[in-house]
Image 1 (cartoon, rainbow, N blue to C red):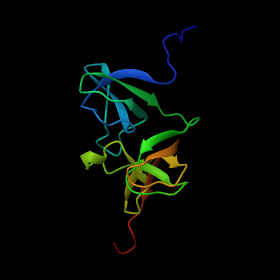
Image 2: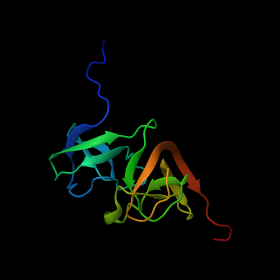
Image 3: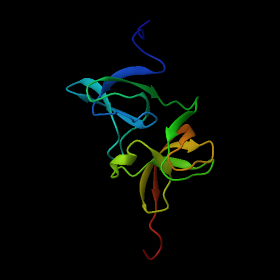
Length: 145
């Protein structure tokens, strides 16, 4: 079998930045000169498809779990939401919210839906979510805006 080096579930990878205290946040896989590492998202387009489950400083090993639709997860929430809400990355310009999810904003823009809320959520909660890689959704500007 030629698939002997594949893996399922959580795995250890280097932190590409200080991820201390960031458990429950989403991170994306990148690299440093070909060496895999994870970082907090800095753009709405970042494919933050991994849940950080064990923190670490820059250059240390951390544990991440790849998101799969066959399972639900608890992810840090920014703001509030109701069950069934489409969830996107929180405002990536706010460093304190990096890697958190929020309900799809009503404001115009293009957002990447990463999950659906499976319970009612309040700000700061570790919200039960189901990955739903729905892709990019464009919210149009209000008429006359």
